[in-house]
Length: 266
Image (cartoon, one colour):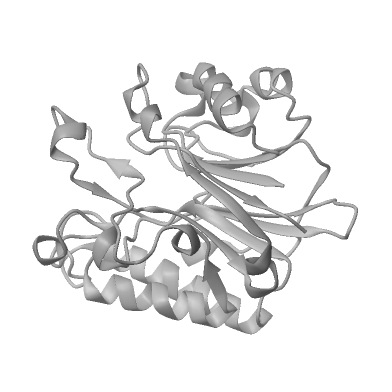
């Protein structure tokens, strides 16, 4: 089973790029974030043409939105939450119908948090922390996860080598201690396993995002690992390979995030 995640940054604008993702990664399940379109305008035809006959989406005009595209039947998990009471389409939980039993997949788009890492003066940062806290409490209430995968643009780069400069990024939203600690509590609440770091040791650089502002993003390489794939502990032994499609950052009209893949055996 190959599960991929990509913050596509407008699915209607970048629908043609989905073909390249499929050609490079051949995912069975593709989770998208920042689809930026209401459900009635989602490009179902493009997804269907790529073999994703099963789709569950939740979107809104202009921003946010998540989608799960699959080659296997899907069922939406009924205990959906309206995080922070905003109704802003940042989470989908689905059950994937597989021969050995359903696989639970959660697709998240965590708020970015604005520019100032102070909840008292920045309501966007407060929203981000509140969002993660609510998700953590929900995860703890459900108990340790099993046969589950969580993916998405979580907008937190937790480890020293998830950012280009640990020292310079400590005061920058996405790598501040309060965010890193919040993510650690979320992981602990579900006993999640960081699948990407299974393959890339913690002392090695690992990025999935490079700013549009960089004129030569490859040369400066000031990246961050904002996109994650976590698995339940019972799936950790089945991890087979990963891929970070770095070349996608050079595609015409591409996202500032790149697709990430995990292959798992059951």
